[in-house]
Image (cartoon, rainbow, N blue to C red):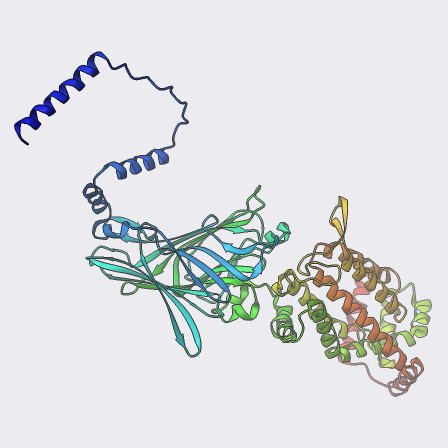
Length: 597
């Protein structure tokens, strides 16, 4: 700077100083705006943002190094979303923490016909963390660089997303893979180098999930939503059978954990086993958008800096779940052990077979009824013949009632003797019906859990997976509801008709005869809010049963049955009592003696 420039600058500064002292007005004081008090977290966040804006990069780097040590460079970056997609699901992940943010099931819609998001970043939070010399390091604090590739093997395409966080001291690599046609997302984590920094031998995992309501009937959804888990001892357990809050610390290692709602499951599966498992579930009282709140926390063992898990995001289809891992199909309730075999080995396969040729599920239900009834027709025939035999010997039974009506024990003894002489068994008509009961009860569990029926319409029912609201009542009937299900009503009428038809062919009298009319009415109350598909199945089953019995009646002649009974009477005239009959008579005599005493 030369002398002239320096002189000019000094004069310019002097002019500004004189103006500011004698001519400039005082600044206005702005009005004070009322502000709400900030929380401690907000103050901390504001301070951090202020520091980030004002502190030089060198000081910020020093703070990161102090907090995170050798992985400090991994905590700086820009968050972006990356998508894995196949023909079944869309999985959105974030480069910050390599976290799963959203999962959409492409084949399904929510009850209001929106894309079905099984989880999103507002409802579900997953956290992976590791112990280190700097304390607990949460993976959500680290930034990763994405690389998406596609691998073809044995005719199957697999999308592989590799997320890498690198520093001079090492790198952390997380990989996610998704095969075509699969609902399973495989995740792998590998730590390269960072010697001595990470001190733990397990990857800690927590998952908080607000199960989103996907069905219109919230009460039914909550009734069938559970937190399921499978122990290393191959034992299936669950929380959530009721609405009360539940917590459990699992002492035994766990193979998988599933957040299972009515038709869908989000689950995590161990490559080996999960340790130190803690589970909890609660039911929100005033939030109709959430079915249940579920939490899982456990340790994933690491070996040589590596850990692998798998996620399942998909429908509760039995055959699909069975291919995922051991016991995973138990996320679908197939019923108690004495009826579950019907669903597992017969009904599921029938549905799968018929789906290939028919798209209307009402037609499929009709065909399943016909196929099952055809297979069980020999039992139906034996049941009818057994009732017919009891009907033709009714005169002999009436004679015994007149003769021994006042002595119940003697009456029973004489009846047993008569049945033995005539070659008639009083249970011959009931036993075949009992053998058919597992099929009736199996459907009681299958239809409420059949995702195949979800949002499938038939006749007046818009959705076979829920009740058909034929009439909306302006009031609520206790134990019945505020609507009328027409399928349930027709089922009740058909069952009463069959009961009346059967009573004409049996010797049953008194209260037992009236009980047959009471049971259908009781089931009408129970099934009014159950899926329309279940009531329709029972309705069709009743119609086919009535048709079978009417057809058998055309070909069965009571006179021929009476002739066979008379032949048995002649053959058995000198027949000795069996050991069972003798013991039964002795027991009845002993009971009668004790009663008289």
